[in-house]
Amino acid sequence: MKRKKLVKSPLFTLVVFLWIWMILPMVWVPEVTAAGDRIHLVMGGSNIGTSVYMFSSIMVDIWKKKIPDLDITLSATAGSVANYLPLSKGELDLATGAVEEDYRNLQGMNFSKTKITNFCILFPISVVFHQLITYADSPIKSWKDLDGKSVCVGARASPSSVSYERMFNILGIKPKLVFSTPTEAADMIKDRRADAMGYGTGVPFSVFIDISHAVPIRMVPMKSEEQKKILQESPWVSPGSMPAKTYSFQNEDCPTVIIYSDVIVNPALSEELVYKLTKVAWESWGEIEKVYPAVKGVSPKDILSSVAPIHPGGLKYYREVGVNIPDRLIWKKQ
Image 1 (tube, one colour):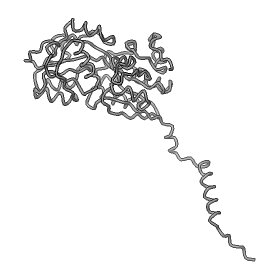
Image 2 (cartoon, rainbow, N blue to C red; image 1 turned 120 degrees about the vertical axis):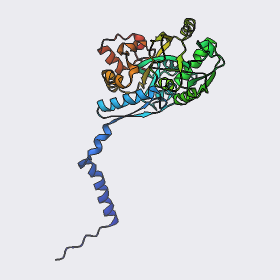
Image 3 (cartoon, rainbow, N blue to C red; image 1 turned 180 degrees about the horizontal axis):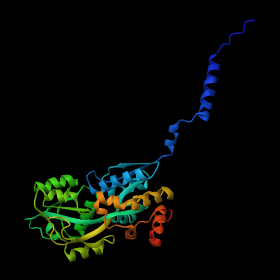
Image 4 (cartoon, helix red, strand yellow; image 1 turned 135 degrees about the vertical axis):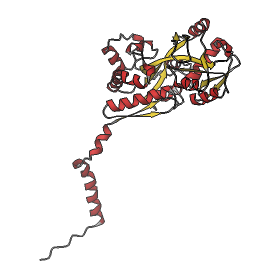
């Protein structure tokens, strides 16, 4: 007896397809599924070519190498001044900052005139020296001599330009501000298209070294009365001095004011992850110093110079290494 031939209707085919589509994930899991467990972060750096961007690049590479299943994308930004708002909105997970900008944002003294408080500090990066150079044969002897002169201060809205504009206002100085990247400013100084260049960064600043190879320059010291005026108006800065021979063209100590640059973090990141980020950073500090000397001398205890609260993950690490964190620096969920 002949068997009846099975007629596969369109409905039958559809049912079989749906059954296979539903059951297949239960019995076959591709090996790449594990990639879904990777943590992806975005870090806001600064202008490409700046020392802060260099540090960010080094730090990101170390984190990716030493923390399994972690990916971090480094994003060039207009500078740490521009990093606070996107970080507070969750568009960035980590970013470079500075104690001055921490204070200004917490107090609503930023460009938006609104308080930005949804950020924590991770760790200080380096001591930022406010440095000022001019030509060796320039008549500029002190900061007050900058009145009416053209001065390169960094990119518009960058931490450096904001700091210098504020200091000039405090001192009653009205120079002609030139906004540009450090590289563009260096070209202007080499060609004598500007009278001076001021920049807040760690020392030695590679751009100043580069300029000194092309044209004779010298540092412009800040007078004690100028320091006092700035300190009175700026609670986040401290008096400081660049030691003689910080640069080959600098024969004497150069008085100025200093602040710390830092790394800030979104409070939404987990305590466990931020603990790892903090621990790896400090345990790799010697490795970082070999390629980024500006971190030299900075240690975990310098977290106490902060004005912003510390993320709970960072707090765990600092307590482990014996840093006594005051209540004012402990993050309180808003």
